[in-house]
Image (cartoon, rainbow, N blue to C red; front, side):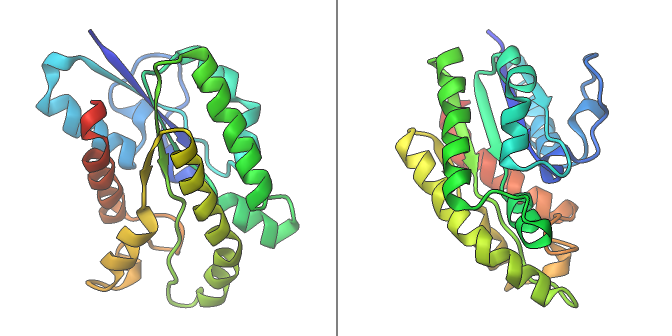
Length: 213
């Protein structure tokens, strides 16, 4: 029996994917951590007939996900739903006050999960912690983002615990990686991972999700 895994989020998930409803095993996944997860699981377990959909959209905030939730999530009826969102809420709040702060982020996030569970009571939900790293010449920019992102990280973990979802602590993973190699090696602009950074996300996702696959 096949299992559908759907990835939702912003540009970090998007990865330059092609916007098409036609089934495309490569291009519709983009070039980010969902692509790497697809490649790993699909190559190692072809007999399980996993199906993968990437519906990340660059620039999305939590409210943007809610606006397209029916079309881009519920209508696909995924067995596993993976969400990574938050950094744009912090960025847009500092930029033009159009992002959601932690309390609103939590309320909308819970609405998303409530609708997903109503649509499929057996759905497995994965909540990836939003993250950022300070990089050269952007220290102040990332510091300002982290002021608002840290409370959202706490909310993401709380939401996962409340809803019996899997929580993937990505900030810690990137902080530890930055002790081994300069931050730009993992996240080139403080927000968007390099290919090595995406591999870190994929590794953690596979580790934490092994029991639901």
